[in-house]
Length: 198
Image (tube, rainbow, N blue to C red; front, side):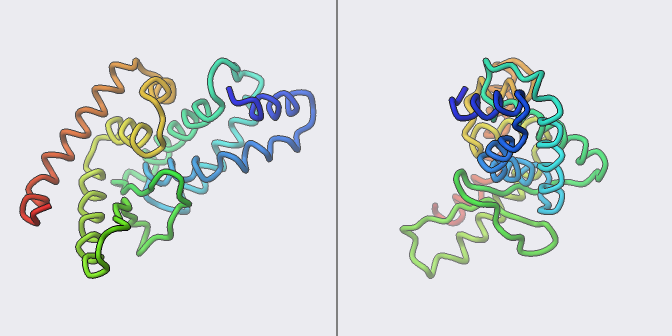
């Protein structure tokens, strides 16, 4: 576990609750981005992230230092997203690029995966945006477990082992979900890419 995380957790458990803000500041954007990628709604993502931090705070005494705090927190976020998804019973969209803040939505919570290429000519911007929207739609059709594994591994940057901890399953199961998600996206997107000559 990261030394600064360990120090903050130890301080909180000893009664210095203000140190919890260090963990919130460090992981808030990542938690929101993960929630956003699973729910596709900015307001819901903020709510779920806040709920996850409150739950993590209340359960901090149960946290085992052998794992990363981020991995433990992501598991709470994913569980909160599952609850929210069941409550709303809607198909989520996905967003995000590692290391970037959560973008604003274009319309009512419909967000897209950023595939912008900095070397692309500005005249290709519209085509790139359309591709981003198509990728988003394809990811949105993935079953929740595949989408979660795909987003944790390819967007949040979790290792397969970390994703397995977050999803509370075996590494082989995560590999299977990621493989199936990738294969699904390949089948969905290849015809369009071939049509455009990409």
